[in-house]
Length: 280
Image (cartoon, rainbow, N blue to C red):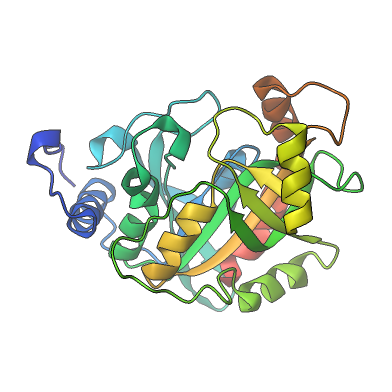
């Protein structure tokens, strides 16, 4: 393990995949773990689950890893963690918990995709993406976890550059979703629509998303999932309904409401991930 300072921004590679490779090498140096198996991106309501998943091998500030920055929003993680997750009858799983950059932070889509690209460069074969979201179905009460079956990318952006054609047919792996339903057979599935943010969606935008087939709306995940598929990762996604979307409920939306719903649902989310992650 090394305590050397990370490269200055001016010295970082311009190519996003070279930057991801550099970040992966830095993660290995800082954690003492040469490679990882699964990457976890724990959004609102999910972060506390990391404490239930396994032994913390190392935890370092994200700012020590090239391409990552301090969190821009209260409630979002700002560290990189390496976990050892025990599995019955098998070698422990090496899990890498990475922070996420949201598109609304204004750092560009390359920064949004950097986490999953770093995960792939670190040897991960699976990316587990989670988020807190607004729900369009009144039957999905705040505090309900939902499997993401598909998404709508409504950001008008993509992490892919140039003539890069990637199949998205089974983006949210049907195999991994089946594993998750084996842990919790009552898990509902939904279609997640990512908006650009940072403002919450208007009632008209929520209605539009519903017409297009969405049951969940939020400000993350879709761009990361696209980049993860391009990087060769198998993707599993969970949303936590933290509030009913605008127009579905007559209550105003607030970030404090999202945080509170996440805190209340944390034990259920932790139990779900503790059952799912060892299977990945």
